[in-house]
Length: 102
Image (cartoon, rainbow, N blue to C red; front, side):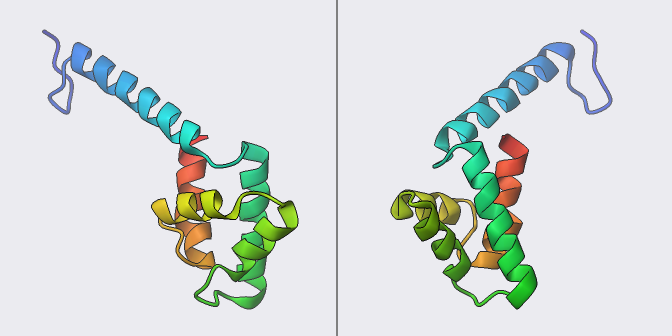
């Protein structure tokens, strides 16, 4: 048995790699929109927060949802599930989750 620096052997490292791939795939399947639409949402909200600061609401997010004509409830639910309860958290938390798993 070969043990690495963290005390894991090769088989354990392999299982961990497989688990990470599976977790990312599961996260991608949960995305409420295609990647290009989520990218557009995050760009819109980032620009709004940069321009006006966070209003401690989902005002910019909801504006984009209405303009894009996508399902409001599924998008907001996913954002909140990933820490996006207001526009600045959408940018900081949900966008980060998206980037880590896309």
